[in-house]
Amino acid sequence: MSTTANSAVSTDLPLGRVSGKVVLISGAAQGMGASHASLLASQGGTVVIGDVQKDSAESIAEKINETEGREAALGVFLDVTDYSSWEAAVASTVERFGHLDVLVNNAGIYTPGSVVDASVEDWQRTIDIDLTGTFYGMKAAVKELKKSRSSSIVNISSIAGLVGFKHRAAYSAAKWGVQGLTKTSAMDLGEFGIRVNSVHPGSVNTPLTAGLKRGFGQIPVGRAAEAEEISSLVLYLASDESRFISGASIAVDGGETAGNNLREDT
Image (cartoon, rainbow, N blue to C red):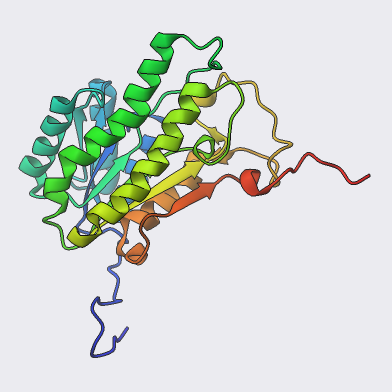
């Protein structure tokens, strides 16, 4: 594909959509994080799977390496609530693979409760993992991301970070915070060539949501998403295909936040 003489960026894309890119993913030992890692590796990326479950992270990495027939993945211990753990994960990434191009802040937990009945401990733990962990990851990675020709931060928020969610005070507050941090950082980091976007999944079939009682009447497409459907957007935002997208908050929710799908005509 040709480009014009004054084009700043080539539009020729490699066969693998993230070929040559090194991606650090938090909370990637299961669920959506593991799905993101597998898809990115299948598209030519090299992925570092960070998780407090180090054995599971290493196991996922081994499976990816076997599937891809190359050193496409590395599992490392990562406690997102500990800034020094983030620094160590970034250092391990650069030591093994030479650089860091993409950060995916995927780690998160859900705790129920309103301001009336949520425990103080659950509030603090949710904020520490879902919001502060995202800030720590960005702060630890930005020095290396600045060195990349084209770098990207993908923050996994939730539709609870786009609309209010009953009985989820801590979770919703944290996910709204992730959206605000994303938009502010898109402005702060744009001058360094770092794009920052947030992904807002709706209902997704993962181990985290397996025990939840939920209906799908509020979702126009009538079902929950599979993890791979979220990973497809993560892949796009990690790739140079999205090189002019920054500061965006993108819902992947089957239309759930489009409006009131439960209201019937009378």
